[in-house]
Length: 265
Image 1: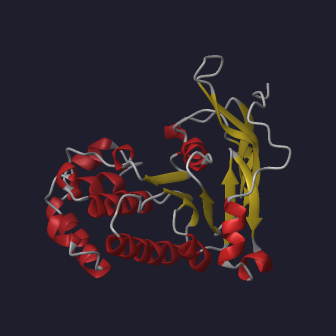
Image 2 (image 1 turned 90 degrees about the horizontal axis):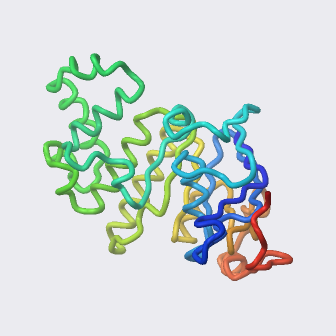
């Protein structure tokens, strides 16, 4: 179980550029849950996922995993718990490596580097070729030897997602993975992503800009605005959720909201 406790994140604190990204965020997520986080631009969703992954630190609050305080753990230390696929795939993918090399590196993520150097590339190539062909994602198996930097965006996003899953962490973090794609590429990517999540039975926290997809494919929907949680639809409330209810929540201000609320210390 993940517990996020009274989390505050402030960028450029004490300067004219100070911006409070998260304002006292609290929630818990059960093992196996698929949670979609919705919100308008600037709501704090990406900051929340980047904190969970270990890319940014808190100003105040705690993060717990199965009763263990992991608040101060580094990105590397949290990598056994969280793996990530961000819309900025450069955070997840080695641009100068090929698709195959990236997938192999993800496979041996926690192994000794000497073992990585001894990998039989032909057998790994056959393995990943078959897996990508079975995935049926826009003939991606044809691009195994292509450098990641040369890939079109849908392929690069799928590569980031596959690497995150291959690392076999406990929790999958997905941040706006279909952002910037055309409607058809977005549909194919999200459909394939959903199949992969269900097949691997991973606890998943994702930010997404497709409310209909969230309603149809999530166990729970959290809505954020102004760096706070303004709605949390789960259980029967999630089952009965209508699109109009979601749109109302997306435009809801937090109770007692004050944009000048100071950082908690």
